[in-house]
Length: 554
Image 1 (tube, rainbow, N blue to C red):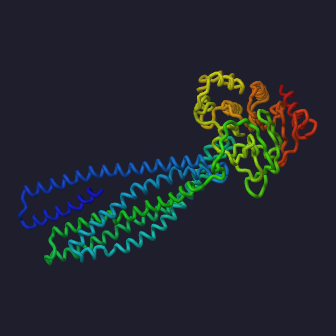
Image 2 (spheres, one colour):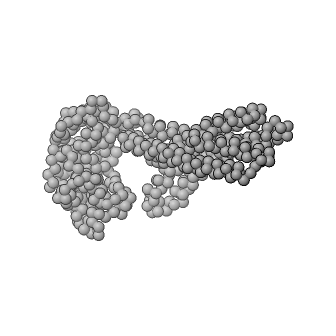
Image 3 (cartoon, rainbow, N blue to C red):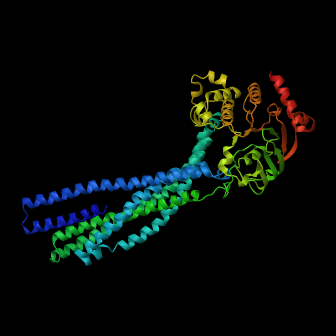
C-alpha cells in the first residue's frame, strides 16, 4: 500500500513536468514517449501491487470472519438451556450472519481506508503545502465543516444501524418460525395471518434501514459538495497565481491532481465512518453474546470418576425456572444402580424438569443430587453427560439418513445395531422403505410419522450404552400395538443400566421396580405397579381407562 501510494504521488509530478516543458516549447516525441511510458509502467505496477494488498488484507478479513464465526458457534454450543429459554433463535442467527459480515467489512475495507487516509492523505497534503501553502490553506477551508458533519452523521448512523440489526433479528425469527410451522399454517389456513406478521416486521426493518440509508445518502453528496468547493477555490485563486507568474501552469495542474488524490481519503472518511460505525455496533452485539456465561458449568478441580455405576440420590431437591414459582419442591428419592424407575403424573407436575436435573441441563435451586455418592455440582460436566443418555419428549432428528440419526457419527457393530432396530420395532418399517437405513429423513424428519421419529430417537438413545438411561415419554406418539411391542422388547434386553422412564401409559411403567407419581412438583405416591393400583387414585384411574382403550382397540 505504501509503494502504491508513493507511485500515485509521483504521477502528478510527471504531468507537471510535461505541461511545463510543453509550455516552454521544448517538447519532443522522445520526451513524450518516455513520460507516457513511465506513467503506463507506474499504472501497471500500481494495479499489480493493489491486487496483491487487496488479496492479503481482504484474505485476513475473511480469516477474522471465519475465526469469529467458529468461536461464536463453539460458544453457543457451550451455553446452557436457561440461556436458550430467554433468547430467540433469529437473534443468534443475525449475530452469526449479518453482524459478522459487518465486522469483516470494518476490519477489511475499514482498515484499507484508514491506512489510505493517513498515508495517502497525509503525504498529499504535505506535497500541496510544499507547492503553495496559501493555496493549500484556501483549498482545505471546507474540511473542518466536513469533519463536524461526518461526526454528527456518524453518531446517527451508529444508532440507526443498531436498531436496524435488532429489527433484522426479529424478522429472521418470524421467518424461521413460519417455515418451521409451515404445515400448521397450511392446515389452519393461516397464510394471511403469518404473511401479515412478517409484513409488519419487514416494514419495520425497511423503515429503520431507510433511516440508515438516508444518512449514508446525505453524507456522500455533502462530501462531493465540499470537494467541488475546494476545486473552485483552487482554479480561481490558482489561475490568478498563474497569470501573475507566481506558479507555473504545470504546478497548477499538478495541484489539481493532488486535490483529486486528496478527494479519495476525504470522501473515504465518510465511507470509513459508515463501515466502522456498522462494525462497532455489530461487534458490541456479538460481544454481548460472547460475554454471556452459562449458569451450568464444570467447577474448578472437577471430579472425574473411574466408573459410573448409576445410583442416584435426590436430597431435599427444589427447582424453579424463575424465582416466582417452584416447579419441584423437597424431592427425596433413591435410585439403586441397575434398577428401573417409572415416573408418571398429571401434565405440569415437574416430571421432565426432574430428569433434566440429572445431566445438569439446569442447576437445582436447593438441595443435592448425588451419583454414586458424589455431588453433581463437583463433577466434570462433560464426564457427567458422557455417562447419561437422555431421550427428550420431542423426537428431534437431523437432516440425513436414518442410520446417521441413530449412530450420530459413532462406530457401532452391525449386530448391536440390528438388535436395537428390532427392540425399537423398526425392522418392519425399514423393510418397507426402498433405501432402508439409508433413507433420507428430510429436515427435522419431516418425511416420517411421529411414531417413526420417536422410535428412531429411542434407538439413538439405546445405542449409546450409558450407565444411566432416561426416556422422557418415549412411546407417546406410537399406536397401542407398536408401543406394546417396544416395551416388551426393551424388557427383554435386560439392560444393566439404571433406567428411568417417564410416561403417561401405565403399560410402559408396569414392569419398573419402583414407580413415582408426581403432583404439583412433589412426590404424591410411590411403589410397585400392584401397590399403586391400591394406593394411588390417579394411577388406578389411568390404568383402568387405558386398559379399556386397549381392549376396545384390540
